[in-house]
Length: 354
Image (cartoon, rainbow, N blue to C red; front, side, top):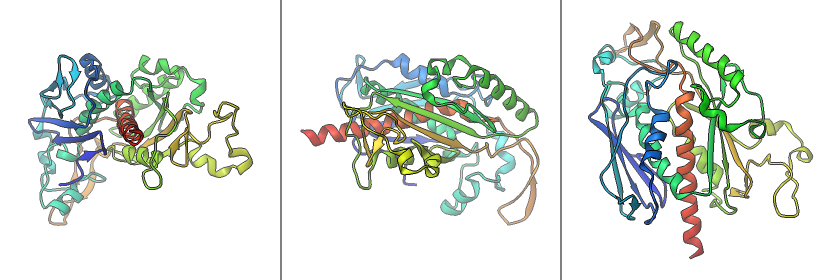
């Protein structure tokens, strides 16, 4: 299996399966001399970990990260950073019923057909448990990029939408509720809706929005490595993601050029920011903002028709511990992937100036 490494200069390779002994990763290319706050990394993992509230999967994993190399006395050495997160609460028997059949809208069928074998325990490598490794790497990337701020938040659950520009929101309230929505009233609606969906044995999708501030001018490598293209790839690599838009996004297609153009101020900033902080594939110093759409979790606690390995139509009963809505736990993952893109492009830009 290829495709387990992300990045050009700041490279992250992850390994492990949902119900294996452990998951982990190697970070290659992290600059030497970066002060690392291990408590911050663990706090980022705690934002993503399962079992943290009543509206997420009840799998109980401490998600404690252990570092094996690349950090000495709290400082990066410039050598590969190796880390492991041990799996502690596997219940592989919960998945014995899908050993010879395929869950609808999961990776079961495609993995089986591509590789001729699959780890059916919780989805194996295709499980979103792998994203914990990305959060570790992203937390280190954030500590390299000390002048940048990454603020992701839930802006939609099902049909419940904040419907406000991020500049009007108090993003410091994002962590004040279990939905991770900075609009407290909407957050309460979203929470109740997710609980209702869970009682129905169903799932619901949503949107995570992200704002990156403090980005310097000049990040991005046209033509094929434009900054927004890299962000799009990063976000679309996250489990359950179905769409990515930045700046004005699809709404911008409804406007005239005279309405959409960002006119300049004398200092080079722009009066509006429909460009989303990126022009010509290069950061322009304004806030970068984007939306990431997540589908409803494919596993539902209802009977569904599917096929087995022999092609027979069978009835599958929903089992296991699953999120009724992934977006609250996806917030730190979106931030992590954004940080990995920005640190990589920052290093590329730095190298080009030497």
